[in-house]
Image (cartoon, rainbow, N blue to C red; front, side):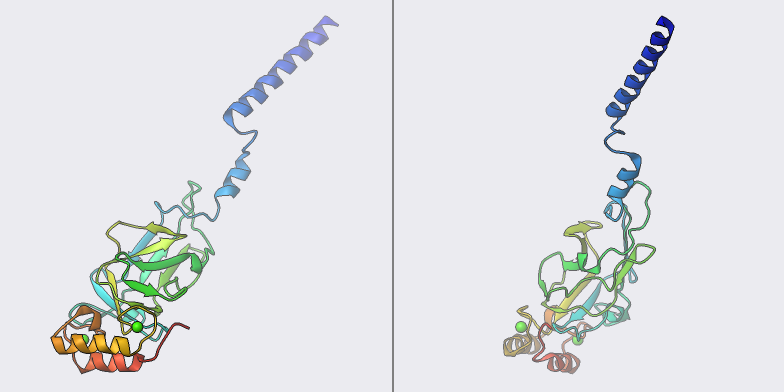
Length: 227
Ligand SMILES: [Ca+2]
Ligand SMILES: [Ca+2]
């Protein structure tokens, strides 16, 4: 009888020790499976990867209705057409460095660091949701106005991603004053720049000079506004 009680008591102690260890280690409240589920789909910005097809300064013409140029037709300060597509691969925060698949494009957007560009609603979001490799890109025309000669950056769910210096893509627009419509006010500003010599904001077909090519681009944009 005593022997049976003794054995049962030892089993009880062993069980209590096991429960104690589970509680202390947190495994009882955070089973391994649920931890993995909790982190799936959340990008780790420190491990996510961003890069540009063109490694160097480039300017993109943006028009409010999206009739500007695609990033594949950006221009260097000297007027050379370059593919300035921006690539992003999202990595999850699970410690496994797996890709984040199907992350919504609406939650990934570009912005000018200096804040000079005024995008339309959703005017600078990624081309598509992330694919099976966690990859998306910006290659299509953007929608917005204003101008900014400084670098831009990628935002993911409101958080800046990548180096603080940003990406070497800048923007100008026929909507020079950035009120998201190309009208006579912009025409006045464009004319001032044209007759005064040069201004980045009006070098719409960027090549370092203001000439009839820029006038033609501006004229085509007149009256355009956000969708
Ligand atoms: Ca305007
Ligand atoms: Ca020009």
